[in-house]
Length: 96
Image (cartoon, rainbow, N blue to C red):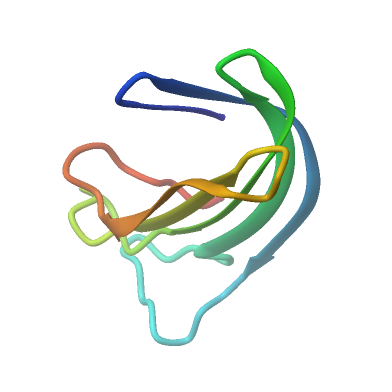
């Protein structure tokens, strides 16, 4: 996973937790067994190792207009450097 915003760049180097579930409030077309992914990992933010990311991605069907993401990135002191969420402006999350 790579995330870029403003003058920041985050690169995931290790996924430490992942859970995929079927959210009963989401009915993607075509159907997906698991439509929601929650993950936690560590990586580098602007080349500094040890930063943390937590994220939730949802797949609400083809086209991606109702796919949703939440991402929070913290630095070495646990200060939040990015927290954002919302429906995708473009692109598509695909659950398997």
